[in-house]
Image (cartoon, rainbow, N blue to C red; front, side, top):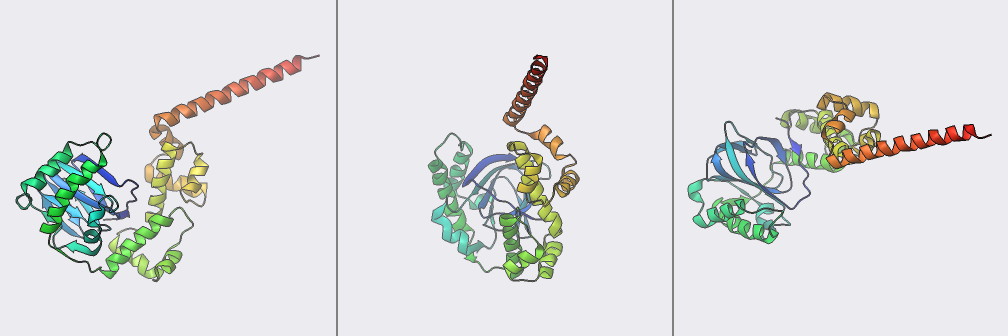
Length: 294
């Protein structure tokens, strides 16, 4: 099981998710799951729980978690920053629950109604204060029922989280295991062991994966040239970029862009080609005219 750090920009992400299965990851936001139908396995800090309809789970900031649906599930998935729910900063920063799930019979009718009301809201059409209000009702009760205890970090797990956070902040720069070890105040051999024993991957594989993911975004959403994308994503050479990208995506960067680019970007590229062709035609016509001059 490899783990990655997920960098989110939005303060609130809220949606219905069907048959959700997501690999192990961590982020600085809180992740809340409420099961509407079916069953889903939720793993938080290496403990796995089976959630049934009406059950919920709460992943605190920088807790490693993942989900797996075996047959069918429909869940309400809410990911929010502490800035958005600032009334709960102390609880989410200084405490952890003994068990990060609640069963349906532990959630009051008021909290269930608030969660079901959230199901009907759309982030693009409703005032964020509505989300905050209903979430506050639900979180107040859920945090009380989860029996919070003062948070005492596990040194090795905490270092794993620091390691992934540091890479997420610096992966587009020139980066080595030695420089990371120096920044975190440990030996590179200790970090290498964390990658192999805890994260179940290698440093180079993880770093390359982060860079390829950024390259995919740049290829499909910006007009940057492929060479510019390579360097923006942190690759030291286009040769390394092409090799790594093809090994990961089984497509060349050019083919990936052609297949997945946003429609607006494709139109822009087509317009650019037309403009270049027109310019070439006009240039050729001008050359022909000049040749015919006495």
